[in-house]
Image (cartoon, rainbow, N blue to C red; front, side):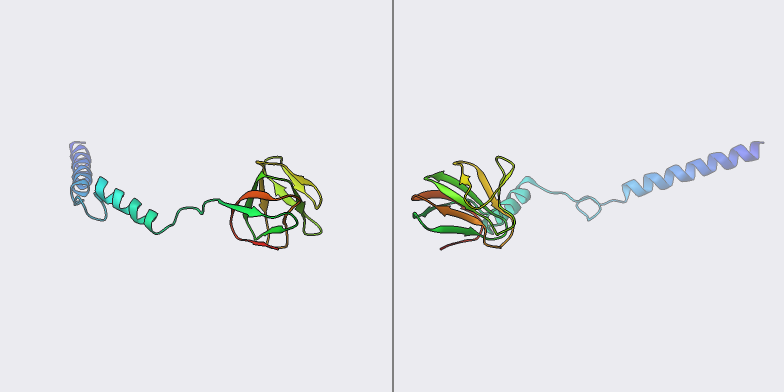
Amino acid sequence: MKKIILILITGILLLALTIVAGAVSTTPGSEDDPVVTKSYVDSQIAELKSNNTTAETFKAIEVKAGQKLIGSEGTEIILRSGEAKAIDNGANGVSDISDGKDLMTGYWVYPNHLLLTPRDDGRGISATTDIWVMVRGSYTIQ
């Protein structure tokens, strides 16, 4: 019985020493235990900003009466002033994200509603008066 207890105690001690040795062997600043300073993080953030990796911003665009603004895939459009109507692709409309609707050709575009052209297939808006829109993404004016 004493032999079994002695073997168990020896096994537990060996296990404990192995765990402690593994915890101590990690060198601060190594790949296993990296040290990152605030200045390093700040420099990485500044580098990301200078590389212009942030999302593209909206641009204010004037579209004259009778012209069409056709968006590419993923283009976002917000009518800021004037009157415009939607242009569909013959099957699907321009997504009015604000209202949760598809705007088919001839539907009025409401000011300050976020529109999305999901594909590069001719969808966009047609200016019935001179308009100002905010656009994010690729587009053409016809």
